[in-house]
Every structure is written in C-alpha cells, then in structure tokens.
Length: 517
Image (cartoon, rainbow, N blue to C red):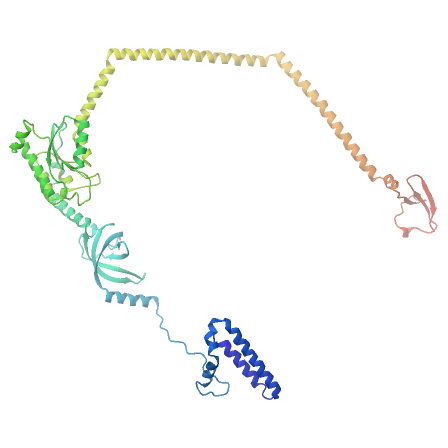
C-alpha cells in the first residue's frame, strides 16, 4: 500500500536531481511538474479506503521515514518494509500427536454412558462400535486382550456404561475411547441375568426334552394362572368359548408383573397342584364334586422385558418344574421368550395360541364329526337319487347341445361344398374369364388412348420449342443473317470480311445481295 506512493515520490526527486545543471526556470518547471504528479496521485487515493490513513499522515510519514536513522545519502530513506514475523509451522502428524498427548493428559480415564451402534466384530477378536446419545457420538475400541466378561452380549441398541481411556487414533485423526470395562444397563443387565439363570437351570436339567410331558388330547378341566383383569384371560375365554364351550376352567388369580409377582405365580401353580390331589379342602367344598385337572395354563399378554420379568424368576421355574400336572406357558408375543417357556412342557406363542393348542383335540373331533355327518348325508339313498337325477339332466342337456352343434356344423360344411362346386363349374368359370377379358380390353383401349395423347402432347411441345429456337423466329424479330455469296458461309466477324467480297443477306422475306467496301 505504501509502495506506489513512495515510487512516485522517488521518481519526482530523481527528475529534480537530474536537472540541477539546468537553469532555474527549467528547474521550476520540473518541480511544478513533480508537485502536479504528487497532487494527482494524492487525489486518486481519495477513493481508495486502504490509503485513507496514509493520506491523512502523508507529510509526517515521509518525514519519519527520512529522519528515522541517519541517511547515507540524500536519497537513502532507510528500510521501507519491516521484516516478516517468524511463524511456527506444524505438520499434520505433529499437530495430531500434540492433541493426543493433551487428551491423554487432561482427560485420561473416564466413565461414559450411551447406546451401542455400528457394532463390528473383526476376525482378529477386536470389537469396534460407536457410543451415542441424542447429541453426539464417540468411537470405541474393545481389544481382544481386554479382560471383559460377556463381551459377546454387546449388540446394537444396548444401553451400556463404559470405562476407558480417551486417546486419538492418529492414522485418521479421530479421537476414540479404549474400553477397559463394560457394564450393561437397563435391558442389557436384565438380559445378562436371564442368560445366567438360563444356563444354570439348563445345567440342572430343567429344560431336558425327555422330561417334557404330552398334553391330554381331550381335556375336560384346566387350571389357569393369570391376572383376572388382564387381556390374556379374555383371549383365552374367547377362544375356548368358540372351540370347546364345555371345557371347565379353574382360575388361580395372581399378579403377573411387579414386585412379588413371581412368588404369587409360583404359589398359584402349587395351589392348583394341591387342589388336584385334594389337599385344598376349602376350594374342593366350594367347587363341589370335581374331577382332576388335566393341565395348567400359565399366561399373560405382551409387554417389555421388564414387564415379563416375573416369568424369568427362578421361583416360577422351580414351581413349573415341580408341578405334577403338565404346564403350558404362553407369555407375551411370538418373539418373547421367558424361562417359564423353556421349563414348561409346551410353549405357546400367545394366550390365544395356547387356547387353540389346548382345545385342538376337541375342535378336531368336532370337525371330524361334522365331516362324517356331511358324508352320511351325502351317502343317503334320497341324496344319491337326487344326484343321479341331476346327472341325468346334465346328460340330456349335453345331448341336446351336441345335437344342435352337430347340425350347425353339417350346415356349414354343406354351404362350403356348395360354394366350392359353384367355383369349379365350367360355365361359371367361362363367364368369369369372359368378364375378365372384357375388363382387360377396356383397360387396354384406355391405356392406348392415354399413351397416344401423351405422345401428341410431347410432340407439340417439342415442335413449339424448335420453332422458338429456329432462325425464322429470329428473322421475324428484325434480325438478318449475312453470308458469303460464293460459299454460303455465315459471317460472324466483320474483321474477316474483304473489300469487294460479295455478300448475301437473308431477311424474313427475301434476300439482299451486296458487296463489301
């Protein structure tokens, strides 16, 4: 910004110095010229906002430059530009390393909670995933050598609490957490408890297939363990009413979720077993003379894992295992599995499905009876006679239809033969040929007339063009043809005509003989 102004200033003084030897008038003109240049430059800088400060301090700035240090000559203005400041430039690797050291020193080991997503398990045994919440996400690494139990239980969507060291993966310049400890939260913690109890009971043989008992095909009375106010009991009663209305149900009401629900469910199962062997005398007196229970249905509707947790308790599993009556477990929806499902003799996907399994024998028998009734009705002599009469009507209708169709086909065939006979008769063929000959003669005459007329037209047109191009037409317009009288050669160049040469000039009417001079 200072450079063009000083250049103009230096240029002016150089012009003055070069003219010292000249007279005063010339020197004055040079100085006036230089002042004019400086004023012009100063005026041009008014519109430049970058030179506004420079314009206001013009004289002081030049004086300062001249007086800042002793000049070696009258044209030495010192150093016009300051030295460039020293800059410290870092490479990407150096900057990343500094950030890494800063993070490891200032943050270090932390506890952080969030939800697992983008989980990837490599063949090397290392696990990579992202921990996120509503506002941010953090890359995490769980190395194979980390002493963390149940690492296989990690999955996308789990809520976890992690302890680890914050660092930077320098290859990508990305900060991440090296996981040292994992604690599952919410559903994840319940899932671990579920797996532990499942392994424990499986080791004790509670899930063994050989101890599973088959259900009676035609149950007359069943025990029902569920909440009296839930949706499950309504579904069960609806299906039973539709498929086996005669089935008797003994309800052992209990809570199916919440604190103490597992104990109530186990107590209800034991109560039904006691009722079955006649130990619950009060219940027996109220119910009257009753036969034994054929099976017990333990059920509830769908819900979250926490809602279904009462059926994952060991007390319920032990009660089902110790039951002398076959047990059907129908907890939640089709995708829900509980410990009671594994221990029970039969597992149903839903309460409605359990009711259908229990009533399947009676419902199938009713369906079989209905089918047999229909078959007997179809085998009755009157029914058989009606079917034969209907068959006779169908055959008679088919016979009539075939007769009409045959008659129609014969008529069509007769018409085809008649047409073919007419086409091959000689008189008919001769008449057709005669008609064709007459048509051909007429077309030939018409074609000859057309060709003759076209030829005449072409001849007349050619004749008219020839007349237009003939010499007679040229002579008729006032022109003449001059020829050598002796040879009859047409003369086209006057320079080739000799003096005294006999000429013959042809006009439209007649000829004129002359001699050239």
